[in-house]
Image 1 (cartoon, protein in one colour):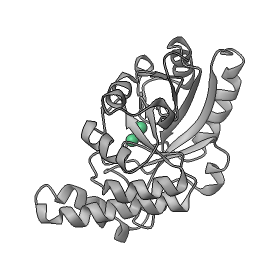
Image 2 (cartoon, protein in one colour; image 1 turned 180 degrees about the horizontal axis):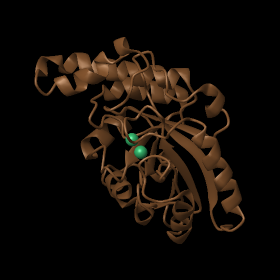
Image 3 (cartoon, rainbow, N blue to C red; image 1 turned 30 degrees about the vertical axis):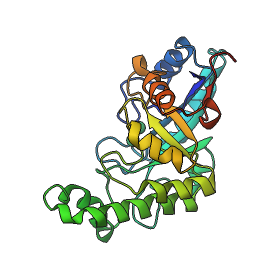
Length: 246
Ligand SMILES: [Zn+2]
Ligand SMILES: [Zn+2]
């Protein structure tokens, strides 16, 4: 299995250590044909972009860089945060419509819009002290993620289940209905083999991304290739892969 694109990486506009240009150059040097910047939405505490207009700024930078980097095709996306169990996002539809694609993910450290919407996130921490909360936490995380998938045109869900457990079959059902891909996040080496198998049995398609926060990790997708091959999942079910012979 060979990967031609990497669509989840961060820049100095959020918590990444490379500028937009450094990430583009790194992607071109790694031999990828396509790359996409998907910085964190503004709700991540300490790691999100300053405001959502930053995405338009990155889009313009990418456009300007394209002529100097003809070997790689660049896209602008976002890794948006889910703010509540209704599936609302931290980036407006007006901005999302101007981007090439939308990724959404659950993150445990986000600023809720309203204080009464914070409980489901806080319970993800409280569950370590009070394990009986676990089923409630899973239900709420699953609801938040599936509602977002139904509400928006979501290209892929990032690291599904990482630090915020979900009901895999329920989330997979929403992904199947909406043609949303299940990310295998090579940077976090997540999900693991067993979870990949479970999601695959539910019929979802996958995408492998690096979640690079440094230029040197752009295009490092080996974990995804090995876990998919071990699970016997063919490249036709992976949005950014082709067979090695092709
Ligand atoms: Zn993330
Ligand atoms: Zn990320």
